[in-house]
Length: 314
Image (cartoon, rainbow, N blue to C red):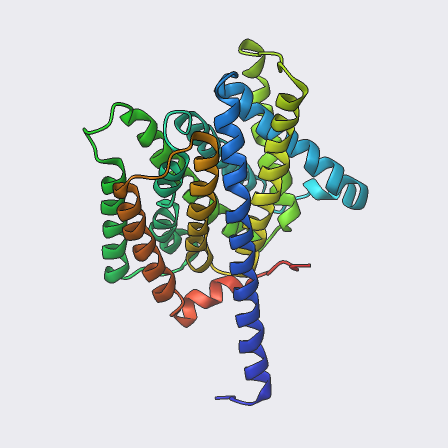
């Protein structure tokens, strides 16, 4: 078996791609709390459907202004159209559930519940991506969901439906990440960013005329546009991350959102998370980190899945 400089260079290149994937996921984790904070502010005066539409439509506008001058219609050229549509539907469903739920749930608590997304990734990555999961990782998933129960405390809150919506949002987002990783071997990240905005905008444009409320101030309109700018930037980083590294490795690094969510939630409401949110978050994060560490020990068969038709990351 070869063990010379060529093999070392290959391993070094793989390690560099993993680190880049982690970096992009961490950047996305710094962006999304700002977007969620804007959602909470806008939800005081505008219907959720309009906020979701503003998020997707401004995302599409940003993507068009960014990609069309340099790539033209080739930005929409995909080798896996049905996977792109499936991922986009999962993403808009996740967005809708989260935006509706976060109206009634503190930002840090909502972020903690959304941290279950990597567990759904872990459960789905084996059948769909070939990233194997062992019994110990299944146990970690179960422990992570126990942490969610600590955060939610079923039966002790008035607004249980909102927490359930955020769990549903995490499940849809987990599916989206798995689909994005599957597509990453065939389409450029820019194509996925474009489709995620296009499909959501088409769906929400059929709904928003029935609930439309004209923005009361220029600042409100600017915040609505800001949703798309932040969302497009965050999801580009997610897609870029998944193009560099396996979903089970990079997805737990979205836990960094808890820092921004606590800070922005405190700035908006003046409240800090209760002890149960901190304890549950710690359980969820610990379980997710365990999954991330053990998942890096890949089998050759699993690794081969990601050497098939890789995209250029630049």
